Amino acid sequence: MTSPQPNPTQLDSRTEPSFQETVNLMVDQALARMELSPGLAEKIKVCNSTYMVRFGVRLRGKIETFTGYRAVHSEHLEPVKGGIRYALLVDQDEVEALAALMSYKCAVVEAPFGGSKGGLCIDPNNYTENELEQITRRFAYELIKRDLISPSQNVPAPDMGTGEREMAWISDQYSRIHTTDINGRACVTGKPVHAGGINGRVEATGRGIQFALREFFRHPEDSAKAGLSGDLSGKKVIVQGFGNVGSNAARLIAEEDGAHIIGVIERHGAIMNPDGLDVPKLQEYLREHGTPKGFEGGKFVKDGAKILEQDCDILIPAALEGVINRKNAKNIKAKLIIEAANGPVTFDADTILNQKGVVIIPDLYANAGGVTVSYFEWVKNLSHIRFGRMERRQEELRHHMLIKELDRLTAEGGMTSVSPEFKEEYLKGADELEMVRSGLDDTMRTAYQAIRQIWHDRDDVPSLRIAAYMLAISRIATSYISKGL
Image (cartoon, rainbow, N blue to C red; front, top):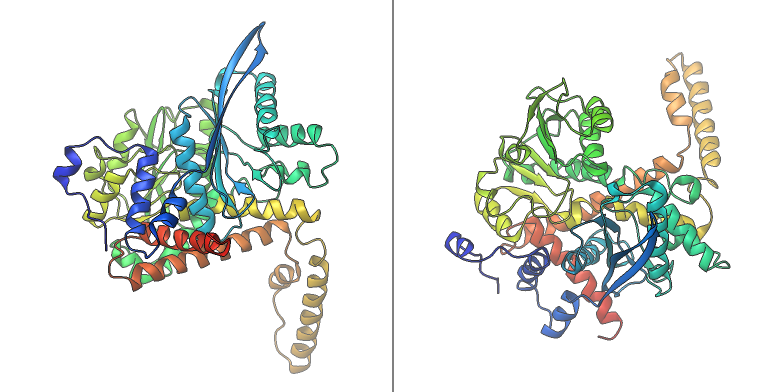
């Protein structure tokens, strides 16, 4: 039995669902196509627990009180995993929805984690670095003493408003409390490399977007559904949100795949160039000025939201949830949307876009690059050795033996030897960054292939999103059943 799709009249007559309601409605669509018992289906949907903490920090001569959250959606596998974001709009509904997405996301890419998410109601731009460190350490203390940060139970990571710096503070705070925990660095991922992080983590989500797009275009029947052909080369792309994820995704697909980034939308406006923007120059300009206004490589548009509705091949929403909604979905002209952010397309917008024939590569798969590389970092911390340290030189030695023999054979046969450039590249053993990228590429390929198989094999599965949710739910259900539920 399939759940009915709302018609346009129904969409106009009710309030648009919240972020958490959107996630649950999409889960319901998947569950309606599966044969799970009602009790197990409900267990998979509900958020297991949400903790709210209020704590004070003395700043500028007075005590300021902050509110933070940590939601645990599913513990079918432990530890649970999910980022911590700093934003004024953080609330219980948001962290529970994001925690649920983390459960499904980890299941899709087969990362052995349950789902969690945290947030602090704060605008980090209003505080100095020293003040942010005080706030972060106190928030971490409140979570650590409740076992909501732990290498074996709950492992946070960066999210909107946080990064390597905040993760290093949290890791250090954990080590101050748990002084004898040999695996303490694994309490959080997304750390600086010198503090136990892993090469490739900063670019991971953007790199994952690139790998997801490449895999999509490897299947002509899939790209044909979006009215596209070929590969990424020459595709016109608009990116909404130019933070870590959006800027890395844009740079990588432009430099390595030949895509044309014709528009970038930021909160202070947008910049457009139909011939393609110089992404590195735009990144540098935004770092210096904080706004795209005045950038000489394109035309500034004050109302950036309108650029979402411009004609393009691929639209990459890479900022907040709900930016494509009932109000603007009917005006979206992109043929393909890949969700680099969590929940950028609302349930109602998803319905409208599906009816228009727009293909959406959903968030629970598309932006899983971050948690995938976080998994690699967690494994690195638990094993206490960087990837490649044991095998890199042995690999180089075997390659050297092969090249030496090829040189001998070609010399005896009077043939031309392999080029010096080939030798240099082939003889080099894989370092940590190359291994991380290889593992991420394999993960994104394998996950997409599993999703598309459901999409193509089932006549009652109209979208990649429903297929992805079905895949995730089936894997979570298997875990629960194996536990005796």
